[in-house]
Length: 336
Image (tube, one colour):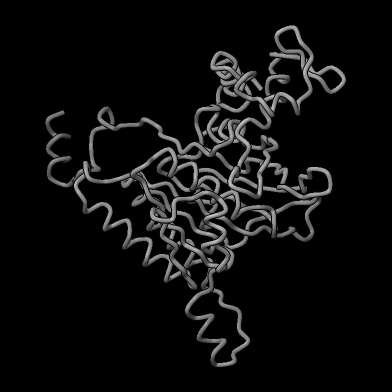
């Protein structure tokens, strides 16, 4: 044991320690949706990992940017002294959009990046500045990259300026290298990173299959990969948001190939916190759905009425029971 301690002292740093001294407490960023929390962490009170990379992938207009901003808002609301760096590659995030989501603009920095190399350099510099601060002075921080699929490379831009019609074969290697450098640094700093990405149809597959662009770099680096698909949510004839189907393609925190439906509003409400809990409770036998109405406390109530007054029906006691069901449904080591 003394020999190992000597090794740790001689070759180690603040992040080298005996296995028994490792702090493996998992911290989460509440997404603002109980059912989505359950999907990605196995608990309705969890969320996306607080020090790992989470990839949100989907086709165009599936709500990836809106979803990311909803998580940012929830993170800032939960951490009054926290802040966020938002790496924007699509010029999609402007003052009006941020204001419409109810996000504190004094605690959000929007960083425009064009190339993978530029994102890598700026993100690494930001993490290094953060890590140089004394630990007790580090405020909660999160990063968002929106989106990976729109990042170019310096070679691609140079070739275009020289009118060369050549595909840049180094792009996937640059992506892999960027995340290889960032993954451990973010973990040391306890900074969560949400990366949005595009998907495409895999040609020639036996069944319809979606795949993320950008090579294998993000697949290996991400702790969780969620695929999104959507349909419009209407109030009468007015489109008020999206109903988004979220499916775990990869997860180190919960079961893979599970899916839930979440509701995302276009206004400052963002993610509907309670949407999906009725279905979860029904799945776990907490209540029954009879002809569109749920039997709760001896009464039959329509879903719309319950979701209008969620605090009345989803009490602390009920949420604890729903959390137990979520653990059974989504956590590793639980019955399927």
